[in-house]
Image 1: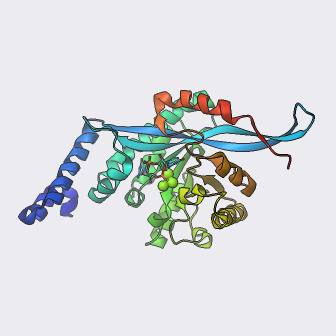
Image 2: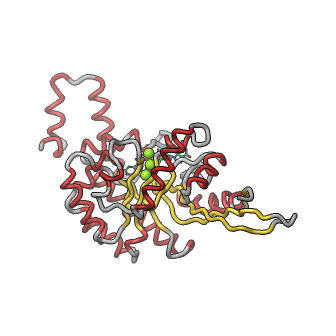
Length: 304
Ligand code: C2E
Ligand code: MG
Ligand code: MG
Ligand code: MG
């Protein structure tokens, strides 16, 4: 299609080009340059696993000591556009998808995330995992599986330590094709997570048809946990059903202690959010871990 060749785009829009399309064209050109000039950066947000241990406290009372263990990170792309603040992904990923630039950006993201993972496996242990977001268009790329396999082997990584995050909406539509695409990725041994789970139209039974390994409960459900009985019931349902289906559940966007204690009560043990750490550049990751673990590791719960 002309759209993919880049040049055709100008012909198509030239006759009645308004301001909006000129802005778009400018942005598209800037995105292309960004790839050449290596203006993209990854930020990383830590993921923690909670565990509870019953201990005898100072007063001889039983306490639940909740500890959190760093288990991985999610990579989140940003654009360091010259002369601008860091541009968030929602401001350029949609255009990158439309124009097809996402294939190259996505490849860069996979390579960078995996090379970072290789280093962090040495620091944080060989169980440390990396989650990488994929867009719908990347999933359709027939070369994706081979590319991932070669990136993994170039970095000497076991496939289990990489988790691909895809949104529900990205799997809707051509269900059969997507089943096969996911199956091919899954057969590499990598994990597959449904991102923003609960915001689409799919039910868990529908998702069963896809070879997924984890669900990431959308932030909107986490937000008013502890204030909204409905959301608590919804999240509990997701967690309970996920257990039946033997899927891991990750809560995204955990910001408060209150949300955290609700999640513990519900039985959701893998968490990610500002409470534990914001996404930061790789060079700041270790420091941000140290700061957050100090005040996380010794949470005292009630005698339960
Ligand atoms: P996502 O994968 O659902 O990522 C979670 C988003 O929530 C991130 O926004 C993260 O910074 C933010 N977040 C994390 N914890 C909290 C919290 O406690 N509170 C609040 N309010 N927000 C929190 P970000 O980095 O702007 O990314 C937005 C979306 O852009 C991502 O949503 C993902 O869908 C997409 N994206 C990011 N990186 C990539 C990428 O490399 N490739 C593709 N295709 N999409 C990406
Ligand atoms: Mg994600
Ligand atoms: Mg998400
Ligand atoms: Mg999201």
